[in-house]
Length: 120
Image (cartoon, rainbow, N blue to C red):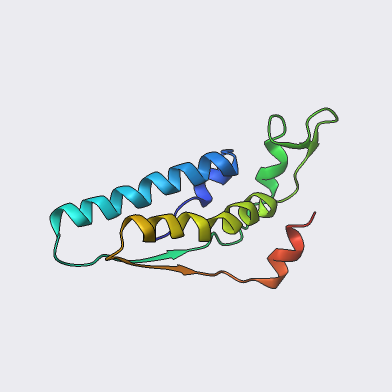
């Protein structure tokens, strides 16, 4: 299951993106539980992958700026992607607790170059 990158690319902040991802994932799991009560769900959930359109991040300032006072824009989506990816293990842990019969796996993007970009 892939979701979230278009939210960030459209200007949504990481916290709101995570809330949407949580709502969508829980809805999928609830629907599966309702329609297939005797069959455990299996969900492979991927971390967000690096985007290849960083030029769009610059154009989003304001309101999405590193420093709103100086109108200093982000030059990459990687800080937001990294923030979402770091929160995903806890998010999926909550799903595993609430849907104990389901198999929910987080696929790590684990891109070393993108981790370096996240520190900008």
